[in-house]
Length: 290
Image (cartoon, rainbow, N blue to C red; front, top):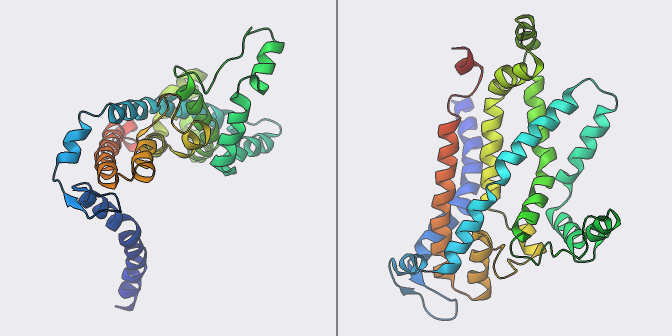
């Protein structure tokens, strides 16, 4: 009885914290989405009017498009992370040094990373100087001022910072794979690339599922790098849904309207998470060998 009570106590404490700081704010936000509220005036119940207005709001659909487009980071990031993990898992000299250097961006605060890359990407900045020196460009490039490429430059920063984090997770997965599977495949005549695609990758499925889910959620909720680098500009070309919700809520005080947008976007994030569960539900050693 004492052990059971202790177990429930350990479960209850974090659950209480989650109720106060996660579930209650979610419920409060969903409820607020049914009202017109700007802090100054009294809340006015409008039902589903906020949601109806969002369906005809060009800024909402632009932000939704940018957020979905940001998901393009996920497959590239996961593929490169797996490749890096394979490389640093090999028996090479100074591999601990390479692991450390690749992991340093992970522990660097995103604000510092974003501001540093904004300085690198500015017109006539260090990147332009290097490209001029190599005679690859003739005129300055507006990496963050050109609406056609600004979002992709921020996506690159997100990918650059996340590589080391996911690399370490995949590295742990690679080191948990029994050498017997790899040796058996080589004895059967499998080439190195065949071993990688037909043995290593299937055995990494649980790790790919976790990393893909986490990176997809992070990509959909990206905010800090966009706020620090472009504030959603130029011409809303880099404004994602979290940035839009922030702008409507704290710049224009449209708390009900922004809550409705956040509620709809949360449903989209949840749907993508379920999709990941469906794609990788058969992951692991057991499904591959059965």
